Length: 193
Image 1 (cartoon, rainbow, N blue to C red):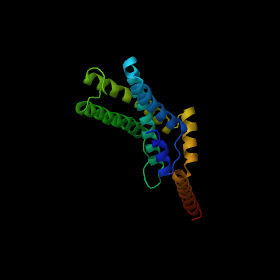
Image 2: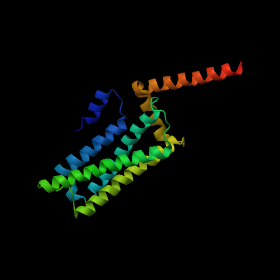
Image 3: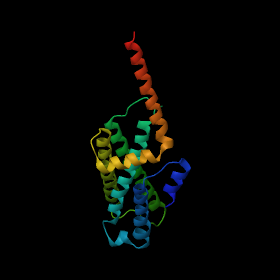
Image 4: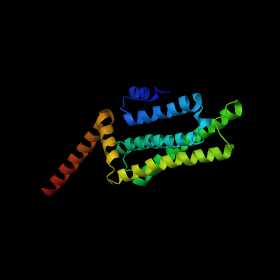
């Protein structure tokens, strides 16, 4: 599982921010090695909760990256509103978190594993609330970023993501520059009439 980000990056020829890869590996380490192998789930009542909050943040980041790329795509002739970016990032995080809870329930139902702690409905609801909380944090950051409100760390990360992914963003930038030049040319030709 720890190779998933590298596999995605290589197969899709995209650069994934090191922070995203680090968060993914941290979640894997926390859940598999510390949580399961070293019984942190049993030792610390809050261990599962921290991991669900972090997974909500990670999934919110993935949702924001996906919608940011779509919003920058010249073939999609629309400008997605900041509220849509917020909604997509948030709902992406909550949806994947919900699918994970369904997976936990199925595994617990057909095996002797105990992926859910305490009363099932309470564990599921708390996990979903934490997934949603992590998702809403990133969705709010994405909302303000799209509204051009300065978000220092995010500004740097997005600029780095765009610079490191020229196969995605260079064609977009060139398309926008050509479109702007055509508009200027057409407006200049109208002045001479």
